[in-house]
Image 1: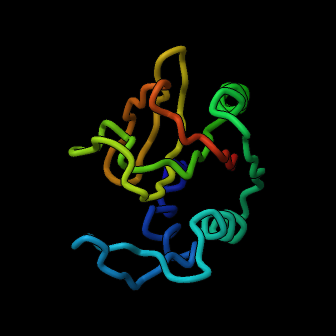
Image 2 (image 1 turned 180 degrees about the vertical axis):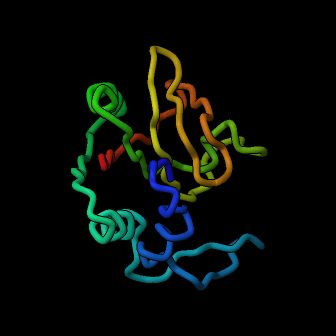
Length: 141
């Protein structure tokens, strides 16, 4: 998603993650969610195949997750998620939780904003810290 190697496209990472290639319709929207497959497991698998060292952490609160994110960003990019896509205000039509998990790469953080690279077509998007209520896991590559 934000790797410096041009060969590491989001498509390649998605394939290496074992991402689901089937879907079901839920309220006329496609949901890619087969039994037994989780995005976190897929991301971990892709990072392992690509030779990245990483650490996965979970947090009891948004505050502790944001504090750790600040610490980790000092030494590099951080994959953050799962975040509810409906809470990502830079996505057109995002108006609140929709129950769709999504992962982004955190690039920077300040008191009010997390700068993220979103592989869904939003490089250097700004996510207000106040809406980052779903920061639960941090994966550092």
